[in-house]
Image (cartoon, rainbow, N blue to C red; front, side, top):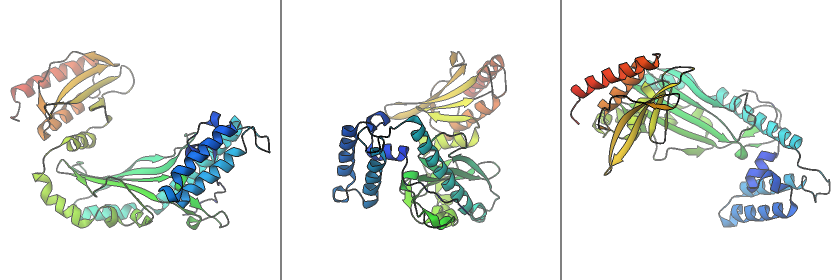
Length: 347
């Protein structure tokens, strides 16, 4: 994978982040010096920092000094210079993303999962950044998911690069040897309605980019084989509930202890929301329905505990209520909730 030569050494975004200073304060020489001193104390190797971080602090101060009122050049930190540096930084992010996509061996991962679970897998690049429409960025990366036909088995991996950590040699021509970076990796699996935590930490940083081509590094065979036999015996928890809803319901999002699902495109905006609560440390869930953000009265289902039965009921409701009129949604929800209450499984 070829990459254009990056001639960027420091940008306004990088410099402001490195010194933790605002654009307006960076124009003031005294405030800039104070920020430089604070950042130096924080990032010096003798105080728990690193040589690379200290180098970034020094480069940031040198860059911003050119735009203070006391600089010998008499330049000002104007909008054009700021926008130009942001564009250069955005170009760096796009170049890093190009390298990631070029080195990622998707088929290796598909073959890995298919061999262990004896079924076929598909993949989807769920998200990648920066986008062409972004005006600035501090990271580059992508989210990729692998799944079987019924989405009962799902594996997701996130690759992320913090652009301030990117190192390159501008004396070298184009090519991957011109750029290096620590790669952030987060991976997990979903099987038998349970989340599989691949490592003890959800997120790790590595300079070993073999993880882009060798699935064994991110999803060890022994770990996946063990989970196949132990998943059914594990308690169903909050993280399992959330992942079950995410993997089985489209157009949903989790925030503030609620899973909200968009039922229609356009107006009116219909949303069904599954809310999580706790009482005496015992989690339970309920249901709300909204039209353009306004609460609509529906039959109350009562307390629903955090179980796979509750998750399956939510999946049925959300998928069944899609592409209906507001009145049809109310009728459908009331009918289905009444039936559920009469057949409610024991918790």
